[in-house]
Image 1 (cartoon, rainbow, N blue to C red):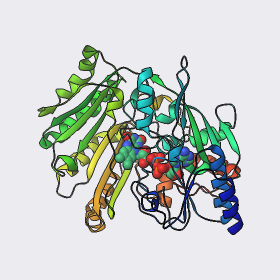
Image 2 (image 1 turned 120 degrees about the horizontal axis):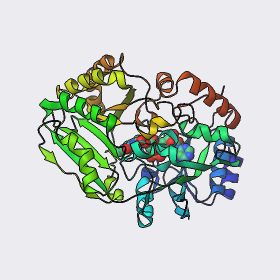
Image 3 (image 1 turned 90 degrees about the vertical axis):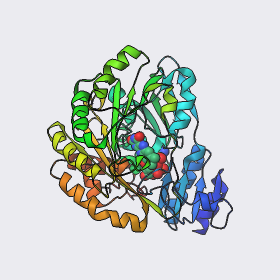
Length: 446
Ligand SMILES: Cc1cc2nc3c(=O)[nH]c(=O)nc-3n(C[C@H](O)[C@H](O)[C@H](O)COP(=O)(O)OP(=O)(O)OC[C@H]3O[C@@H](n4cnc5c(N)ncnc54)[C@H](O)[C@@H]3O)c2cc1C
């Protein structure tokens, strides 16, 4: 351990933060989890990342890799181990203006990316929150405001620079290390630390963005009509339906349909969005032309002790009516969690299911429930939450790794269907046979 530490101090050019240091209190926690790691390492270069990986492996300490730190399961910290916090590797550079290629540091956030690309008239379909990391979101999927038109964030990834468990620096793309490239597009942080992502960005104009609100009593008809409309709506339209939003009153709150129309032509936008307006009694309509970067909202770090419990699943077309009926009822009942339903069809479903390790391409909708509060509140909500998921179980399948607050065997099996899991385990064995990168929905080496 001492010699591993001596080597680290010699080779590492970034900050090494230990308990007792003034910045330890903030450095030790990720956004949604507190922790007490022995070392928080903040690399400034790829060489630093290699030194950090070598140290964690040599010292036999648990390793957490932190990108934007937003994992609901708290992967960005641990107790007594090493955290490699990539926050200083946040450069965003347009490397090829004609092909719109963009190189992004492994610790950048989507707010940094959106702001840096805006002057070029470019954007990458990502998520809805500025502070969320490019790393975690992309490696497990990436469902954002342009998802129906351009697919998941990982569908725009063309290459990555990866530091492996052995401290090697590899390029992964369709030609070099193609199995690794397949695995990191959906397999999370299991295979190494991505120090740089290379994306093909998309041109963007301002977009029509905002929410349309309906009374809670109309939830069932609005949700069914919304899902029907999205089947034939232009793929420029991406939408999320929300029920029981705690910021709008919780259980029984109005139904909020958030829309993003990828384009600035008011006529085309109206043609795509007006059918939603006709689904019921509109009690609020805030849709307006918005710079794409401004559609992203700021995330929040909850106060100590507050937990955020998120669960997710997918539904194919046949199951959608039953699932939406159950959710409409649940959202109006006392004790309902916050419910979000995201449309994930369009471009996502045109990529073959086995082309990347994200294996939920045939789903039409994704459902997320979230409960937020101190531990006793979260515990008190559990029976109602379990009952809701029990009713959903016959109709839904899978889970989206990025919207899961736990990482049990059952979660891993839901994220990775058997064939995907088997292929991932083989890639894992090749690149991380000792399972150094275990702070994730972990795929053990086969
Ligand atoms: C407020 C909020 C809003 C969200 N909105 C969306 C949304 O709109 N769409 C969506 O798809 N998801 C969304 N998410 C979920 C989000 O995608 C996940 O929480 C994701 O894991 C966050 O990535 P991160 O880098 O910030 O987190 P981290 O906790 O830092 O990392 C998550 C996982 O990825 C690994 N990892 C991160 N960076 C790297 C890297 N460079 N190399 C190797 N491994 C790495 C970590 O080790 C960890 O296992 C949201 C989450 C929150 C909290």
